[in-house]
Image 1: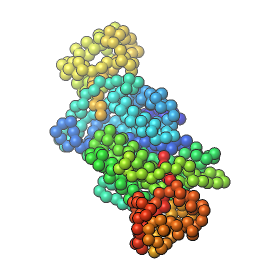
Image 2: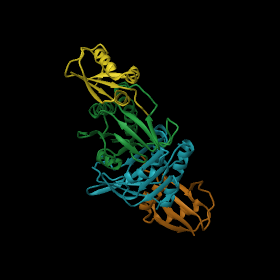
Image 3: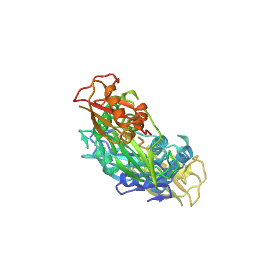
Image 4: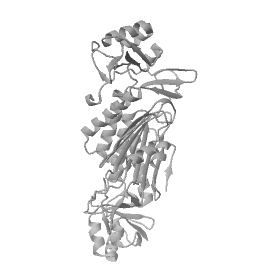
Length: 154
Length: 154
Length: 78
Length: 78
């Protein structure tokens, strides 16, 4: 699944995310600053086990519409932005793989940092996404229940 | 030139920077958040020309010592940090290539964002580095003269 | 028939990700779902948001055969 | 001989990146450099920082044959 526009690329994907390739996609000669955020599974858990993988699930059409709302809101707040990439993986994500990648390019670094941070914060709170922690011998839903909100309310 | 320790990797290098590879190096199972900053040449200039490349020069030993001071100061301010990568290229850097790459990993994203931003801000003000803007038919030193300061004073 | 999408823990509790129901309002669809899926689903539904065609709405909103009702349990967040 | 490193625009104005001078203090080294390189270098030096062995210091600091004096013009920054 992907929805690529000239400068916006949001996707929910079962395939491994290549942060380096996404970062290169966001580079443009007019934008000297590129900020990338990668979220990867951590061994520490909300349960009492060492996590070996996370399993993500969502409804891709719904989730991509909400990703697009995040990128639209970032553009409204920082009109100078260049490219915005918001990709979230679904299915099993192993340690050292990326579950989520955000890339923002901008003429200068202040807006790139501010907007990238807004995007990952808004993504985590406004995109429907459920996460199971997987350990040796078991798994459970991650216990950090939050109500879904809209990106424009953040 | 490179000075790699277990979790710190600073370098002044004449070779192209591979931000994706540096970002992968900074991933560790204990750190779920990785923030990467890439600085790339912009076409807009401090002179009245379209920039086609930037040329960086420094004294590598001196510059690497100052990069290390930036990473040491970031660790002092954010003791929870995982890996820190600070690489700056020297010589000619074309449009769409990276002149500087900063990567910071951390258990959570707030410290990763704050520390990455500190590192690039401190790097730009505390590392001796001179930049020529190159356009078709000419070149000149970039006109943004700043006095060099110490990372710990920022 | 109105489509009901069940996501994450709601899918797990219901045992299906997508189902169809007859009802005039979201409340009627959800009552029918409770009757079909039982107590585990009722517990998840109690803490979930319910959207109509991708947007939050009230539970007395009318629904028709082209509509999609979605049950969204709390998300994992940060 | 004390080493003098000339960086960026200072290297350009001096025409060399590294040179050697005899002198008892940083000021004496710099006076000898001004005599050798001329006016363009003098203008750059006027706005530059001068470090001794990688650290800022005062211009009356004593120097010896193992020391390295560095002329650092303003940097390009952000």
